Image (cartoon, rainbow, N blue to C red; front, side):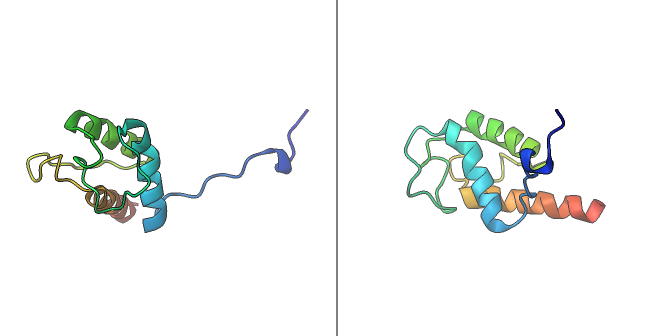
Length: 103
């Protein structure tokens, strides 16, 4: 039987706006969290989230896969512990903008 249009799930929209970037990021990091994330914001640091540098590298790889971008993350620029979710959102936005310029 051939599925009808109603049987096929709609394609997910690309994650490009601030809210969807944040939502996508929080969806990715949830599996690495060692504490509850109910009150987390873009100002929350990786240390507060108890995400270590190895977890952050894995998060970056997942971000690249989900958003279809290459993230340039300089671990020497800022300690992984001091990196906030907002910093990572900014990295995603920059990578998406660079990708759009190349297109």
